Image 1 (cartoon, helix red, strand yellow):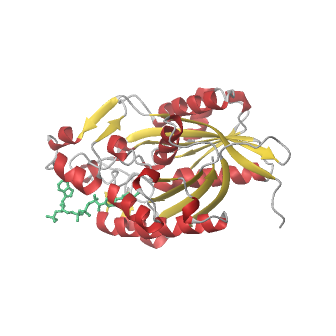
Image 2 (image 1 turned 60 degrees about the vertical axis):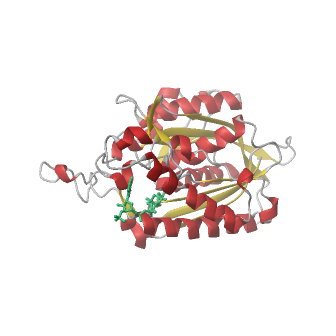
Image 3 (image 1 turned 90 degrees about the vertical axis):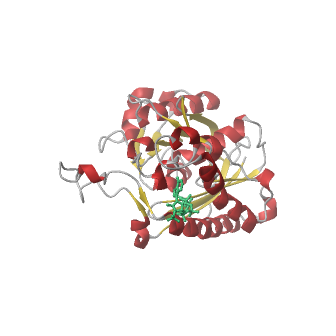
Length: 335
Ligand SMILES: CC(C)(COP(=O)(O)OP(=O)(O)OC[C@H]1O[C@@H](n2cnc3c(N)ncnc32)[C@H](O)[C@@H]1OP(=O)(O)O)[C@@H](O)C(=O)NCCC(=O)NCCS
């Protein structure tokens, strides 16, 4: 197949985090933990918690509005909305349809993607396929999570790790002959290993184990994780995916200006940076402020890096994620 003369460009980024800050010290009043343990084992200092009446679609809509503003586009210009989330407002309709209504994006086709923490990069690749093939010309790709709704606040193994947030990008079709556009998606690799579903999951609340009066007490509808095993797979898979995405883009590790990795644990990020031979100043980290926000992590980090001037036009960015499933993905961008 000859390469498509058209590519996908990220022409706007946006993000939103809820106002309420929950610090490690706050958590140490709820479970047997300490700021010292959480900081040294994870790097997280605080996380944001959505208001009781703030749903995933509310955060997604705020992030999307900021991305639209940055792209200088109106909601009606958008032809596709994909929301990556494991905390949809409800089983159906999709959170993307709810966001469509809140934005007034009447011309979009809308659906959700479930790939846990890799969800945003999965969604970006799906949108890119729509755009590169000419099926759609513009897309809003959103990662949004209210993970606080899936947390067992009595489980210190998990409750210290996660937070709520949303991030979004506007993707546009750019064809040969048009002015060189920023934020070009150069390559993406994705992978999954369903044999490892049990290492990180929310076992209850779906069709396999509906919540009943009998099982509600044991909180099956909250996050269950084998932390140590997850850690090992995360480092291996993210490192491999990063190298494969670079190779696919025809680039070397030395070409990377900034890596934006999934923000689950500072030790995982350091291990990946080491394997890629990248110094700290080329590794974006904001997990100290937000913890792990699953599918929201990468678009929030990308937006922050962009707005803080940490990345500039022409830079090579490497995005890499890992999550429940297991799933993993890596994308190379020319900013
Ligand atoms: C969860 C994680 C931080 C735990 O760190 P760790 O160094 O592996 O710690 P362990 O699981 O070995 O636990 C060590 C001890 O600390 C305890 N502990 C766990 N959470 C604690 C907390 N919040 N405060 C204090 N102690 C805690 C454990 O009970 C265990 O005690 P024990 O040795 O008496 O049994 C780490 O494994 C991790 O980040 N895993 C990957 C997470 C991830 O990437 N998830 C999402 C993928 S998208």
